Image (cartoon, rainbow, N blue to C red; front, side, top):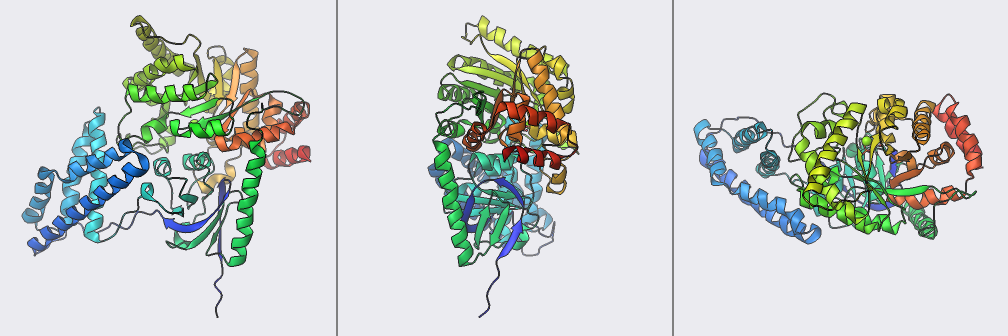
Length: 577
Ligand code: PEP
Ligand code: MG
């Protein structure tokens, strides 16, 4: 008898917990074909097209029905739009004409016609509706061609049994479609701990190992998998003994969580009685339950771009208003910090394509878009201002590099506020206006910014990537992604001191705020608010309880004077003994 050996893959520990289930490969199948290949039997080609169109329609009807059941009517609407396009007689006639006029295969005919539509719609740059349609047509073309080639497309939204999703890379929009009820784990080839897909996995409490480099090559569809998201291990086809060991780990994980749950309604306080705000980050109102369940003391970051990513159109003012109102009401007067749209980088919209750039992380994104295409920005600000009466609203702008950007954004904000007031709309009078400090330029100039803003929120996910010039989602340079490098710690210290010198409040909403190695140092540096994935709130509160700020001040002072990331890690360990 031959004994199969468990394959072990190593990756980056991206979301804690252990998942055991069968693999589900979320990989786009090979959709290549001979382009503009000549065919002689044109009737056969047209029959193939008819069948592919009918099968695509069938698919979409099934997907729509399931999406309606699992995700609700609104989320399913996109498939209705796809069905309408799929039955468009003009488009079908154009594809048929391509086959007859050029004697080419059906795949090429579909591509030529849909490419033409996509290019026409995309050329209407200022028309968001047309941009959305371009995305729809691209999706439909993919589906028809997959049927012509006889391969099936995976669909993350429709997973309805327990699986571990394995992918080359996951976009934030892929991740948003995963249902934590069924998805027991995530494994990817690419990615880093602070890539948005990882952050979302943590907020959905799905164990994840990213940046394995070779998961797709080593894992077949439907094999048994174990994912240890705390250790960064993936076991492919584990033996019985391993399954028992890991099932025990699942039990330990939940026992730890039950213990921490006792701190849910307790304040976050150090062993020597100093209070810190421990808040949660969210991406949409869907995350509010987790905020309340984990006893967060506020929302430190509402990543509003996920309202845009989750939708199939630019959310209207009223749609946004409802989301902000829901967050403010759920928090019952506790602070809610909402960040204006931070699209770009790894956060792209299917229906509104940004211009292709060589360096999207350094390009046209976030506040840069908001200041240039200010109609979208103004809509968002109006929705926020109207919602402000439902709680304690703090608004901040992402990716601020210069004082001028902050002043320009503030001016637009004030214009919209004054206009609403003039129209008799009720607006809270205590809204705070701040910035994300996530570009080294604004961190270095924090003393100047502090005179003009109400508060800072340090976005370490980006601050680290820009300071170290190491892409946060690239596992090849993850060794340079060093949160405890004294260069980073000194920047943070400067930002905190600059804020306090002006009696301003300073928060951190990057993942570092919930990192057990960083928390002791940040307590010593005097950070006011720690905001993190909701699942990290209770572990952080529990850690804070065990530490004295008087000791942490000494630790922080020593940390900023170390030479390396590793020396700081060792130093923190020595204080936790
Ligand atoms: C950050 O950069 O630290 C941050 C919180 O924003 P995001 O992760 O959305 O870029
Ligand atoms: Mg950021």
